[in-house]
Length: 597
Image (tube, rainbow, N blue to C red; front, side, top):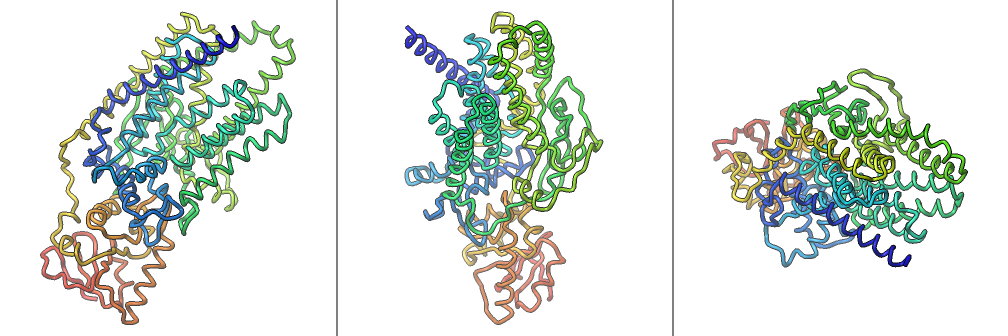
């Protein structure tokens, strides 16, 4: 009888997961349509700036194209063409898990092929499926679990990231980590370590940014278990083995290959603001590379100030429906504490309860402090500023954007709120009604953001023609150079001339990919400027010593860079608002204006 009941529970769990996944799929298709999923529909990816004013998706797509065209090597994740030395496909945010799989299938795939729509569809399906499993542990009510899944699927943070930073929209790995913690008592100790190892490997193959988040949630579950069971060796192995597995797969895909900067700058500016859990504001951010519209993700909640516009990276609005639900559950929980004092007379119950509170509290504290970075703000007001030692700063700056570390707290709040509701209301009809009302408030509140995203990605339909024209690809001079050039070398310092200028990088990358030309540097998630600068300077010096490279073109984006070409013997031309140098005579082209050096 016990075996039959266990089998029935597992079968219901599978059904619950599948229903949640179906909700995720339907939500995705209603929001973005089917055209973004079509494998051969790539036009919208090559001009992603026409969608949300961002170039990132174009860079992600070309990373896949170049990786596909790069011969297999070891490490297996290396691609050529966007730097003077190979770099990992992870650093173009091209989702290594999918890139490697489809590169294996490359010989049978069409020439134009993309998987970003499929990845996002899978993300929504897993958000729904795992979201419903989180609450299934505490309620067997399919309706309540399905409504809970919809909260995760409609997460404003997921909505913001989808097709902007595709790899960083894979929030299902955070939900998977929460699920493992919740179901730990139903998993054997060996399998528990194996499952966490698999999850850390998957996280590394999606985006290494998720690894500290997943390991952090694992550490919290280990602390909670350690308080109850005090098994130190098992606890240490539970964290150590998944960590080693992540490092190993990172080595396999080339994360540690070559010379790329492991640190970023300005993590205090791209941090989490303490008002952002209830702040729907996505501030105006406009410069040469990016244009975020000044918008609110809420039709009801007011916009609140941020310390800097770049704190949009810490965006973590819960939605009014979820905020109301949080307050409701908190009140119910406080009432239950006073009414349920007799439960705490049981020492085992009290010990387990307190262990969970401690594990969760540690996770919230650590992740929140990481997300705040060295400067904590609420609105435009600074709470504290700490001068981190350079070694500590560089350790955390390798992830570049501090604000995203709030995501485990964000999804933890959502999970705890719905779990608390189901435990306190026993998962009955009243629980379903409360969830339904909160969901209705959530949808009404978030409606402007749904409408915005839907309108934007209607442009991704098959056959859509962009108004964007690439001034490099459309240039007669660059068309002439296509057959005579095999490399574009950017002037030093490449850090400011191309590595952090997404617009120019993607403009030249489009031309380079279409014509089989390499670039000495490009816009990536890691800075390649140090090696690119040495490469360019060595090339200049060789030219001053009499060597000539007629198959190379030199690009300078600022006039104050011209002096570094003195004595190189290059012909220099001003083209619009940038400069081109070559051994070739380009004066025949009307667009090329000679510069005397």
